[in-house]
Image (cartoon, rainbow, N blue to C red; front, side, top):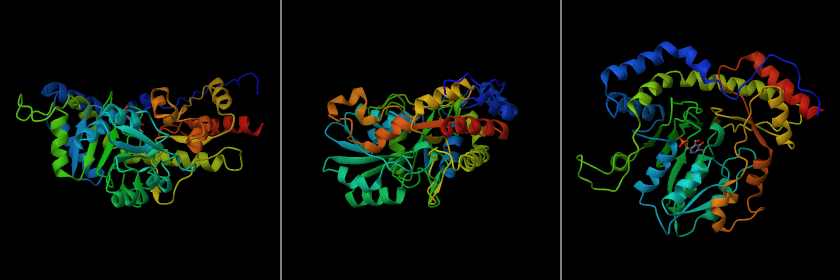
Length: 376
Ligand SMILES: Cc1ncc(COP(=O)(O)O)c(C=O)c1O
């Protein structure tokens, strides 16, 4: 393994947004020009247009744009009045925002271990984590595959707690034919550039079927004011820019094509890695997986990451520390061993490039390098 890096001219980044821009440059440039010429930078038809289109795409009546996926979660928690003394249950293995937002409203995050096959919250462990203080569950759809939404929803209904879907990585994903964000009370999306629907900067959206909460969310994202300067609620500034909205409307038209290309790349990896000692992602037959990430599992993960970096292949670890062991949550009193599946995933998972423009040569090059490492 300590061998010299293979000599090659091929470079495979984890994601190639320049290739995406080259593909749709004229449409994006038109959209940007349209906003610049209108000089309508805050609110306006681009933002409301995107809200309607994302809501329709997600099979939900209302969409509320906001500044980021983190704010989508935060505003949902605030709209529900969740705060000190309350508990919110979430997955032990996710991006920090799934838990950080709970702490940021003053509530306590309660973690549940994952299903080691999907890396999503294990629904069988959910009910045991719910107490009389639990107000909501934040169910994460990690890597672009929904958690078992039917099972999670059944527990939330039975125990009368709100269900917030953290669909930041999963726009367009489905569970038994229902879109990510459509099953819970709130669905939260991120338009961070690396997402399947990514802007040219930060952005986010909440979708909901509750008209009264949609209204409240609209108030909260603009300092709780209606009309302007008359504040019924204490909100914040968490608007989605018109420029971002215009760019995202263009990209939304290409989203299914991109997600399908990602799924084809994922299938190729899965086929070509068969018979190797690589743990390949499990796709639940009830799910439409949109492969925001293609995540493999290997024992010597850190060595593999370096081996691939030496061959100009970009990879990433999502995530190296499970949430319950993050330093900032030390006061919750968790120890190593509390969430064994999340802890093992944090040591063994690695995301490979799966972006739509990857192409067969690069795919084969990545597979060959991974196999060379694991089979040697
Ligand atoms: C699972 C998950 N939740 C929440 C977020 C937060 O989204 P944002 O980066 O737009 O604030 C992300 C994005 O990285 C995410 O992956």
